[in-house]
Amino acid sequence: MPLRHRLLAVLVAVLWGVNFLAIHASLEQFPPLFLVALRFGVIAIPTLLFVPRPRVPWRWLVAYGIGFGTLQFLFLYLGMAAGFPTGLASLVLQASAPFTVLLGAAFLRERLGSRHIGGIVAATLGLVVVGVSYGTQAPLGPFLLVLCGALGWALGNIASRQARADRPLNLVLWMSIVPPLPMLAISLVVEGPERIGHSLATSLTVAALPAWAGLAYTIVLGTLVGSGIWVWLMARHPAGAVAPFSMLVPIVGIVTAWVVLGERPAWLELAGGVLIVAGVWWASRQPTRRTTGVREPTTASALPRDQRQMDPFGSPKAIKEPNGSI
Image 1 (cartoon, rainbow, N blue to C red):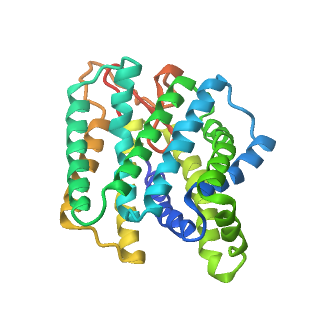
Image 2: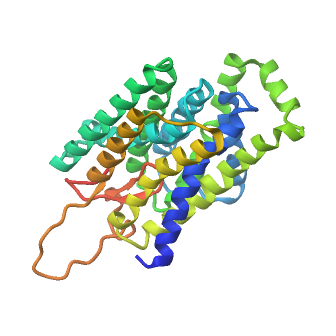
């Protein structure tokens, strides 16, 4: 990859890492369930008006919206609103990668190689270490909520794999039409019209500016710019060259939460984080194969549609069967 493209990949990792700080700011003003509906509602309206619908079956588009858009952010926002640290949330959400591999093996009959198994074991051990460390200081519930968000992300990955979209970014945008109405209905029942109304009424103040800025960041920089650059890079370079940059996301998330919010993770949590990142990175590496001729790099756009997969950030990631990457 040219230096300019490497810098773009680092930029995306920074944008996605800071995104957790933006979510934290929005949750200071809006109830979590309503915030999910608001976030995707803002994206859904222009999408319906201006973005062509991807040529995928409706069942997989809806399933992707339920898993990636609804369940992931429902549980992530609930967990963060319940007090789970912002930086650790960016780390625990990486569990979506091993969850994706396990679900692919269970439902799509994808074979697991030794590299997958080793990476999953390391990442799982890291999650246990983080959970035990966090559970000794605070209730375990918020940690489990964020972990459920990672599982929702993985379910969305499986649905996007089955959708086989020719325009992955269009699929990401059209997914946004699924969460708003169900989440708004659930928010009205659980959080109540009074709480929602109060959050909106008090949002037109100077004190609420960080919440609106966080929401704008999540939509524009976190989703549109970040995903757009990632899709562009994945279409031009081998997945093995681009995907490892996603491992910078939890590092950025933890550092920014440390600097801005004063969240200082325990050493045991950092050790668990190293295991999680190392496990995901190891399982996502492409095995080196010896060939007698010149081997052309494989890009996401060059693979057949049934061999494309959405990476943990909702962008296309090339895989090789049967030993695909996370």
